[in-house]
Amino acid sequence: MLAVFHSVNEEGHDYLCNIPFKQWTQAYDGGLRYGHMTSNLAEYINSVLKGTRHLPITLVVRETFFCLAAQFSKRAASYAGQMLGGHVWCAKVLQEINKTKAQANIMHIVCHDRDNLWFRVTEFDKPHQGITGGQYRVHLRNRTCDCGRFDTLRYPCAHVIVACQNLRLDPMSYVDDVYKLEYMYNMWRHIFPLVPNERKWPSVLLAPFKLLPDRELRRKPKGRPCSTRICNNMDIQETTNQQKLCGWCRNPGHTSRSCPNRNS
Image 1 (cartoon, helix red, strand yellow):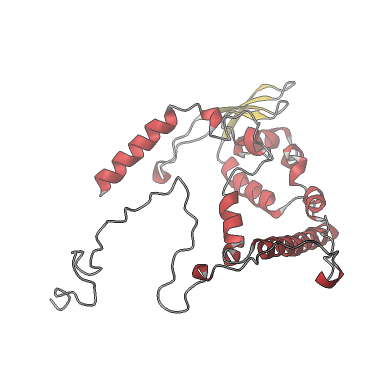
Image 2 (image 1 turned 90 degrees about the vertical axis):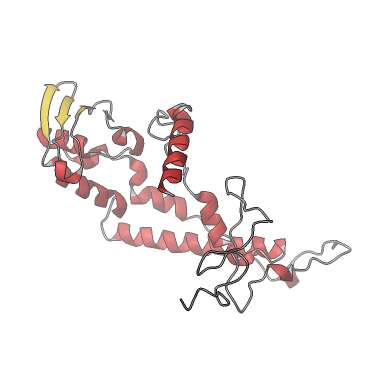
């Protein structure tokens, strides 16, 4: 099993290395994908609408509308309360910066050009943690660092924090404004209008047939729940003629309840 897993990893590594890094990684795209969500957005929508798949399309649209209305109101109230409390930045960025400050205390820095803010930061080896140190160039004026984290995420990495400490600058001055609570509040403060009662809707010509829900898609009340994951082309489909194996001895022809090897 380990040999097969290692072989699959090597094939996947070779496949990805043949594709230019700027086409599939955020660290090498030159900042083109910054500000866009490139992670599991489809999986998130899939989990939110998991219980509405067997409903008609009109009810799915209605459920999506009211879920978004409730989520926007909740998030906007949360960010407004934080701003009233005197907070400026989101808690996630503050947590990451405080974590990197501990790493910055054990780094060595050399200033090469104080006017243009060029620095060379050296990390020390940590054999007990499996970390190999290296040297990184930091250019505060251009907001770049060789590690790529500062360029991609737009908030200071550990090397930038060391440079800021050397000049006695506030690292928060190099955090992008998109991480401010004001920006997040402006994104979530939009209000969804209330939907009037169906009796007050204007009359429309209905279709000659009725849309009924598919009862086969409902979750079974008893037994092991069936998987509700929506498979796509990336999922490996099992063949339909594959013979089932016993869960106890892994032999075909019987189940774990009637397994003859269970008592032994």
